[in-house]
Length: 527
Image (tube, rainbow, N blue to C red; front, side, top):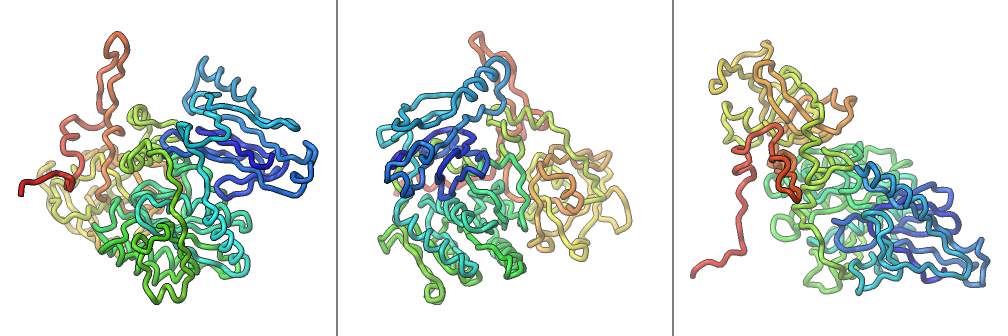
């Protein structure tokens, strides 16, 4: 009915029976089948909101058949089995939400299925607040969608951290999908990637709406048009490689035929001062966007400084700040770790179960003769190279053959490595980082173990085997495997610990100093 909206927290399959509804800018229609919507518990305090689209029939006293009608089927959490699983599935099947004629939906914040809460008419008094889109956001995005009907548009979303850039990108992509079959998304934020685990710059061709946060869909492998492995969450470690990756992605987008070229949405990183601002200026000059969206608010001091030549050729749209909402339940670093957990562990992986599931996965056995290895840090000596690679995250890259010849090393013992000539088998092939920078990447993997006698790397990765055949370089960055992915925690009960914690493929000593030292800027110092 007019003014009503349905909010929920959790996962659900949504089917439109009559009328049209909007979710995060995307229009849900009866012929669209079931839509999987997700607003998980780690999502920062917002309820996913389903709003009916107004029409003239509703205002003139339409019958129930013309009223919007929607069916919501709660998603049973992955891993729920046994009696609990049967009960959850039965509850989900008995809970379709259908408004009756002349009767409004009434429900409090009640848990229907474990992890699924219905909230109607949610407000600031609820534990969660509805994710409402400001009117000026909808108006400006509507202008962009209208302009995209005439010519292909490119949109850059800029702003500092935590201003709502990712939310705007999802709404913009979903809105463009209402009128276009595909939308191109260039994700240049390696710390909070939308479609990949951290440490990547990727160009995706989106065909389905983004109706969930990244961590809720990373268990499904998405094939990008082109991706590049940075190996770090921050761009300041190698700004040249970062900028080169973005230019290569833009070149890949430009290669698409003009007649079939989809609109392009670019999500930028939130570092907008110093070197970060210079990188952003370089991206905008290379992109030459049609529109620039800045959700920093109307205070000029908080708005991003756009180069004058870019502002003259692009339309800068300043948006109001994102509505205040409940505090995030997880820090940015925890969300990055959870992205890795879901990417490698699958849909049902959690912080407490991922180490066990990874320990049970069958890895790929990769011969030393079939790949080259790259450790960007020149401080790593050859005799420590395998230790640096073991239990590490690597980019699965595809480099051109002419850039690969590097150095071959043979070991008589684990501590003695000698350079040898070409043409010998069982050698460790090492290539410098400068030679493989800018090489496309098909995904990420974890080197679970190294067999020095058989000359094998054991690699875990969700990348399909067909795409792995072209991989010829394993690139190690500064990304660290979270400890929850290698150490299985204690299993406690009321009677005390049932199972002692153990680590599937490393040792406890290796966990000490597992991550690089971080500087602390919040400590008081004596003057």
